[in-house]
Length: 173
Image 1 (tube, rainbow, N blue to C red):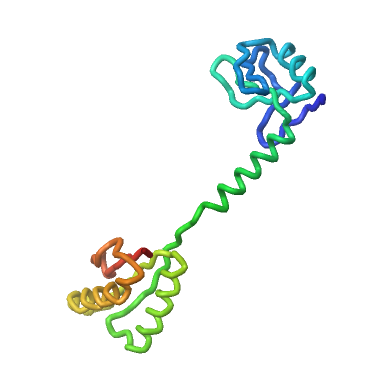
Image 2 (tube, one colour):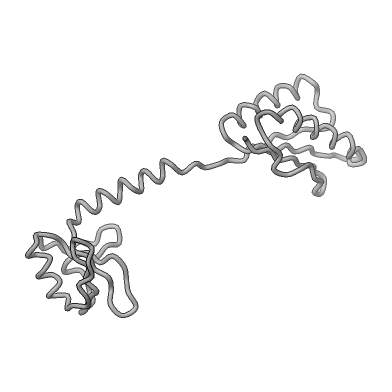
């Protein structure tokens, strides 16, 4: 049980550098501030490890526990948290005012798949040259897009003009 190991940023047994530690026993009760050697002796008597849980201002907090079991539970908990975490990606589809009808249908079908997968969708209409004067038709196009996805999505950001681009952001329901 005489491990001098630093695993995952934990100080264990003799690798604890502080002279005095705040000790928590294996049942979770505070034992108070003790010398490190006394705390190590208590841990060894119980065939357990003394693990530094956190650095305190004056004394680090140390707990008596089975380190292997503790690491196993911590890894399981971290893995479960990572599995339950859902990352939302923003997918972008770029359109132009003169995008053909069939091309638009194809792009909207792809966008529908992205929304069903749980991703946010960003529709961008890019203006070139004098097209910037046709903002009203671009706004109408984006409103039609939003209306076509009204059953499976909701509008995150209404159509807005920024520079030479007009955006619409949809998120899944």
